Length: 114
Image 1 (tube, rainbow, N blue to C red):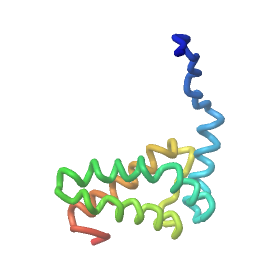
Image 2: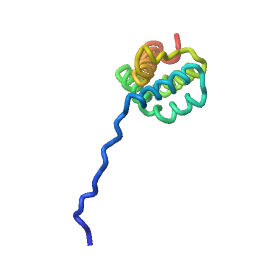
Image 3: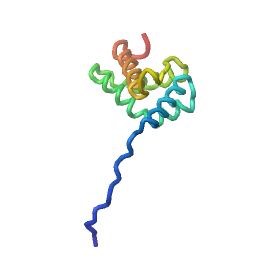
Image 4: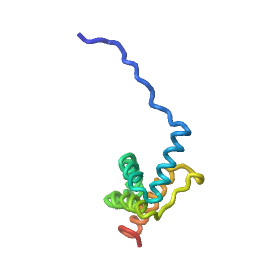
């Protein structure tokens, strides 16, 4: 016997300013080479960053280079080559911007840095 009762669905949690600040701090530590912070970012954001790289590379016929571009981003964090400064903006747009720039390099030069 099936019931037609509607199950209440709670809304997605809102992101507070404090949560954004905590996330910015995590990305700051990752950009300093903190491998635990980098690992947390990789787990949480690899799919979104991969989609960002694919969006840049697909029109150039180089969609297959997207994974390499994202790996280069995480390597740049390990090597502290890209520094995130929370006072200059939020972490997610910063990460996506770096991945887009790396992907554009792959699109121009066919892979890797020139």
